[in-house]
Image 1 (tube, rainbow, N blue to C red):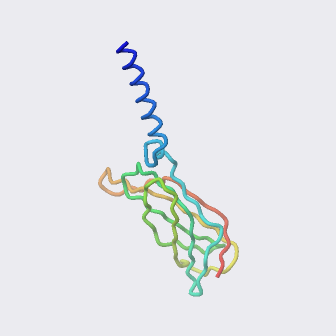
Image 2: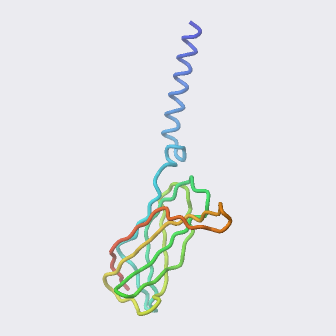
Image 3: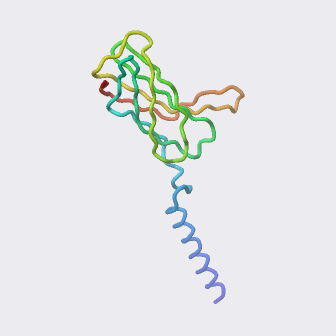
Length: 144
């Protein structure tokens, strides 16, 4: 009878632990959310020619290295690599915002394309080697 009680107790504790793990935020089950990044469908164009794009991202808390968000805007032959952002890797959906100027030519209000990537820097071999975690892209409208 004691063995039956121990078995029932062990089963109850195991079930309780499994339920707690699955229902508690920030636990192992939540940490396996995929890395994602999006580009919003509207970008801003300043009078001085700077373009600003925005979007969302989610970075896994399992990441141990520095994760950067790189963004570029494209319109015809005009291109801008915008300033980079350091990602917060905590499994939450967060927003990013990035601005830059065209390398040559100028952006105008209208249709454009945005591309974003999350890149983890791997220092395991001494020099930082970039590893692309995920990419997002989309058509957008530039507005003043």
